[in-house]
Length: 199
Length: 199
DNA sequence: AAATGAACTTCACAAATGTGAATTAATTGG
DNA sequence: CCAATTAATTCACATTTGTGAAGTTCATTT
Image (cartoon, each protein chain N blue to C red):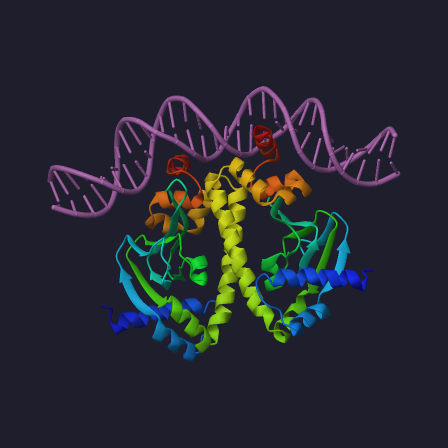
């Protein structure tokens, strides 16, 4: 069980994170406390699995997670890797309540706050903040995605790695390289060679 | 000048396109008619230029457009190519009213409906449809972008070209290959070789 | 601490893509 | 319709990245 002091800390992290984009009135904070539940999971847990309708919207308080699916050759493709604090959910299928082909993998031990899929619809009507926040975070992700697309079309594998190294040193330290290689669109072998060349 | 019958046709195209995602009540249609203005532009017009705050949100009724910017070596990078009917705007900077580094290039003669940046804020408050539609189209673009990212990380240049060929034959026919090569993240020379190999 | 398995590296070779010059084809403007 | 310009192709060669096997390191379990 998670004690109330720890839970309090989780919500502190959540609200501090949300405030980067919008103000949260007390009422909306209260709604969050009511619907978001703390959860601690062990390294290598699959929080949501492909072939299912994902049940939760997750906020990483602490830890490293990735999203992956399998391609036509049954190879794992890692499409996202992140640490907390951050919302981390397989977006498309979550919105459309459809069966997802994606997995949410806790790479390390993780501390999370999560809310049930259907409760998200309820909180959207209760609070004033959520719609505004959703819009802003959607825009944020659109921009991030766009930059990633540009990087993939214009940078070499080595340049992509160097950029990742600069922007996400903590992920580099805490996440297996095979996941990072997949995320960067190269072979683990190629990544090793690049790392060796750099020194 | 554009006659009223032609203008009427443009709005038909716009509303038919919007209805793919949401219903538009008569009132909202009326708001659109009031704020969107028809415009016809010649091939190779730069509708919006880098270094400026873009003034309009554009809907392509007919024609082919692209978005491009210059990288650190002053090379053109084409990040989007599309034909009508479709909204086509340099999104990030439009939302944030900041100076854009992107250009909106009409590759062919184009027929457009456009609305001033500041009027978008007005119409958002007048109509009921806009916010809902914005949310949905944002989600749509996020999904498209995500798939493009996956393609760029997992497909070879040849596979990307073959997929583009299948999905966008009309763009392939109507847009110079150098732009398509840039969009697909390969050299014009490589694209030529790939085309030659396929037959 | 030993054993097991996974992750990572290294290597030699293959395949794909980049580069720049030269050529041909297509388009544009007068 | 011709000249000039731009786009596209082709080629030879360089560079990058992929591939799979073998070896090494690292972590986990017992």
